[in-house]
Length: 187
Image (cartoon, rainbow, N blue to C red; front, top):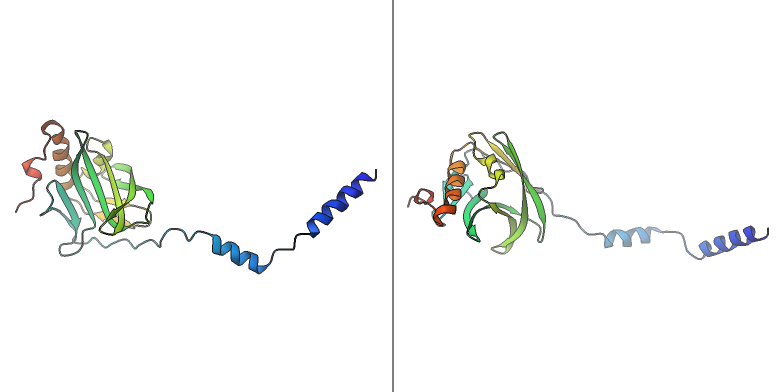
């Protein structure tokens, strides 16, 4: 019967060896916490933004307000003989970050994996998936499309037939192996 008081005494004695927490413990714990992702950016104003063919890069269309930096671009590339579409969102991303870009519009919803990719000394959001993917159907209608990436704001793509034409032309490269002349910029 004497055992329980002895066990209780030992437990209390062991806990008495540890001092109670202090404000200094809280401060040191907070200093050790990761700082987390960078602050999100505001959604850009896209009034007057439009799609245009890249004057420099074959098989690329760029979306933005004329005279300003581009907001997003689509490139038609090849990987293993398969046509691919690369989406580049020109918004800063935390190095090594990954996310899902949500594209919503034209009766479709697509969630495309994007990764922070190094470009010109900064990390920006880039995705690359097969041109034949049903995810690109979100860009083939005649209504606006919203592109949202965590921390990169909500980007509204104004209605335009150009993305649908571009996607179809890129898909056609599966049979020809080259980007069609229609996808070339007018110089």
